[in-house]
Length: 279
Image (tube, rainbow, N blue to C red):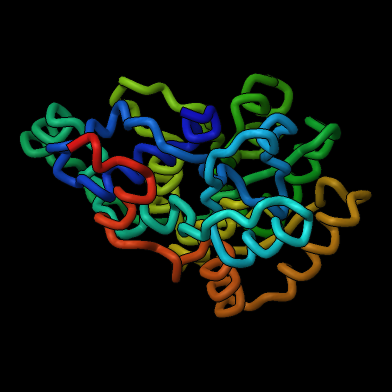
């Protein structure tokens, strides 16, 4: 399977969507996909490798706008399938739990989750801990104490973590983007959905896909604080346009970029991914 398909839990999400009872496909070790899934938001991340242009695999992009951007850049258009996050939203959280975990939750039901406060997802770039200190101060002044989700690279830097914890913010790891096939550990997007469920609002200091995911989940989102990449004209222009959106505008924009309208029924998805042969 193309390595991009082993990221963010995308293959697992689609496997559960076509087989929520886990009877025909193992969600912990999804079968190979005949094609490449768009792994990240193409407006903020260049996700294709030079070698990818030479292969003949079909490309499944998130949306029609992503497909048209590919065409405009001279690449093959791809097939607008809808982002894996769009499929994840249709699924119950228990569909991603092992039998052992479901049994334990029946025996000891967890306390209900009460959403509170802001989840902030920072981008630090090469400014690292220096930008982190500015962001921590801004957040403390405008929001009080917030939850800060850090990438593995950022979490591994003690001084960067301390920039937030020293001012009373809670730091949580976002975890690896790469999947660990065969394990029953929650994949990246499932963990992210769990984080969203604990918060009333999601914010970031630079455009990123998680803001689309939150808006599509109907959480209020915002771009705020000292920005990373202030010298990057693409991110600066995109950030300016996103900052001007109201709540309804964010939802419409997210639905369009994530291809909510392109989500296909389970049987059709099985055919597109060449998974019928696994029956």
